[in-house]
Amino acid sequence: MSIVTDLLAKPGVIAAGEYAYRGDRFSYRGALSEEHARMASIMCRATTMGANMEGRMLEVFQPRSGLFPPRGWVVHGPEYTVCVMANVFCMLDNAKGSINGTIDFMTQALAKVSSDLI
Image (cartoon, rainbow, N blue to C red; front, side, top):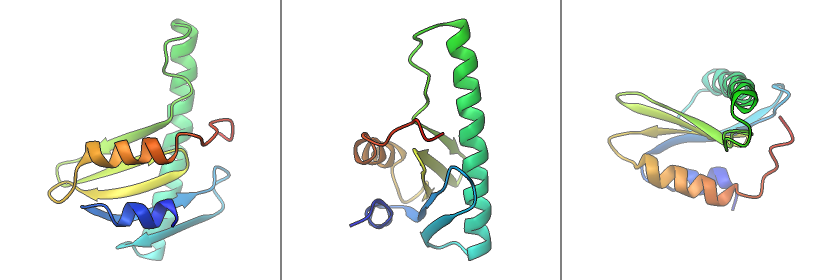
């Protein structure tokens, strides 16, 4: 199975997908329209690039801080959460799923993905 399929089987995950670091391709499954999935992939790429820039800046101020390269990021709202690890994203319904469980799964499943692609 693919990580997207595995994520969709987790409680509360309403959509999951992968995006290209170049920003020109994406794939997804779940409760998103094609247009919303396209916008989500653009948002994920842009935010990942921003997190990498901030990680580099923190590394200048505090070498070996452990914050660079970042492995992912999370935006947690009152109803939904976006979790991104490597080039994989998922949308989580907070009332139905566990943020910690989702992040733990993504961390383990994507542990060997290179961060050099960003």
